[in-house]
Structure formats: structure tokens, C-alpha cells
Image 1 (cartoon, helix red, strand yellow):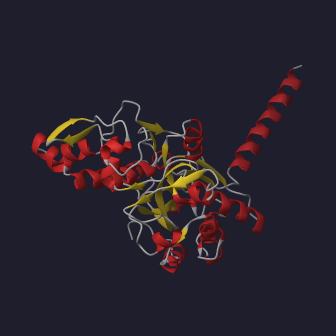
Image 2 (cartoon, one colour):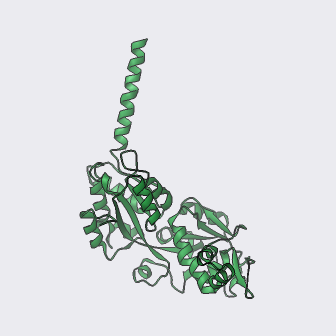
Image 3 (cartoon, helix red, strand yellow):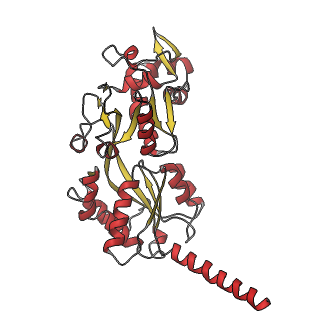
Length: 343
């Protein structure tokens, strides 16, 4: 009986060791739901066209991915964090404190933030002020700061549809949320004159900036913690809802969604590439340089990701909706040289 127990124990140890080895034969990636489809396309192509295993790519949001990334170095930590915004200085410091001192920043291209509703719904021509006045917790009305009283888009601007305000916006762990707050809500706060009113009322620029980005909590603005598929599902069950999406997700769901203009510009890969569409942003992933020599295939995967064949204007990422980076060659050089944020 004792020998049988020892045999079972030995087999369990062998199985556990095999599981660990297999797990770290694969590159581990987590982060932005916006970057997720691009990283998945590359991971699958990498597995099909090289001798390396297909990397494991997970979502969870830019902030969540970077938090995991900054937990330390070694086989029990992820290798790459996808992000739809640049890494923050506070995140770099958190990485350093955990021993992640050499970080490679890799820009893969550009995407836009779009505002889309049900395919059979109304047409919308948005401005930043419209979104601020629709979603901000406080707005300026009759020269005074008041709790947001608006319930319909037509109350904000007479030529907007007479439709109830209901917006599905990315939750706070998503990089898209930060870009939305900065380039749409905060821009609208300035445009509408509310920022000056907040500065006067609060006598503090930081407090005014925070007030500008504070969204209403009465059910008109709904945070979505999942990915864009959850936002789409919400719109399909609430036809008057308008969702905040990445351009590529919209372009791959044009049979279900109708996009609004922003600042008089229709969002597209062309208008983003020309710099015409105002709500665009670069997309990134971050790599632990220390893992390049420790994790099999990592350097090859990073180079593969930014190759002309994958990330160039004729590649599969562009076909999915990524706006190819005009400075892709510089990114390729930085990857080849293993350039980090500190050099």
C-alpha cells in the first residue's frame, strides 16, 4: 500500500512538472480588449508559421494587464501587456519596485474611438460638447452649474434625435475609458465652458479636471466592464443605447451597428490615417526585456508582430481595422535593438 501511495505521489509530481513546463513553453499575454483581436490574429499566425507554440492571449483591460505585467519577472509572470494607452509613470514605478526594470514599448498602429448604435436606429452627428452635456454629473445651464437634468439628446441640441439618453461606456479598467474621458468628455467640458465654471466654483484646477470627468450615476451612463461584445449585446437588448467602441470592432459589425460622425467626420481607417478624425489613439504592447532570453520564442514573436507582413498596410491587422503605423520601420528597428523606455 505504501509503495502504491509513493507511486501515485511520484506520478502526480511528474504531471505537475509537465504542466508547468508546458505552460511556460507558451508566451503569456494579457491586457487591452481593443488590442486583443490583433494579438490573437498574430498569435495564431505565429503558431501556424513557426516551430513555436501558439502564445496564450487574454483580455481584461489595459490597466489590469499592466498590473499583472508589473507583478515581477520570472516564469510565473506574464511576458507582454497589451494596452490601448501609453503606460503611466506610476505603472513604470510599480514595475521597477517589483523588479521589472527594462520595459520595451512597442507601438503597433492606430485605432479610433467611435460612437455606434443599433443599425436601424437614428443618425447622430456628435460633438465633444454633446457627449459632455449628455453624460457629465454636472453641467452649465442658464449660467449655473447644476446636476445634469437632460434625459433626451434633443434637449442638448435641437437637431439631435428625440431619443432617450443611454450610453454604454468602457469601465474604468479599460484604456479606452481613459482616452474617452480625455479626448471626448474633458474636451467637451472645455468646449461647453463648463471647465471654467468648475475652476471658478472649486478654485482648484485639479479638482476642476476631476469634476469634468465625473459621469452621472442615474442610469443614463452605464459602465461596461467586459469587452465590446458585451456593449453590443446591451445595444441589442436596449435599442436606444449608444455604445463606445474601437473602430475595428465597429467595422467588423457593420451589419449590426450604425456609426455616428464626430466633429463632422465619419470615422474610418482613412480619416484616422489622414489625421482628420479627432478621437484616435495609438495602440501598444509592452514587453519584459528580461524575458527575451528566458521565454522561448518571445523575441521572435515580438518581431513577427511588427513585421511588414503582419502590421503593414497590406497585412491581416490592417484588414481587420488597424491603421498601419507610418513609422513602423522605426518600431521594427527598436524591437531589433531591444530598446527600452530608459534608453
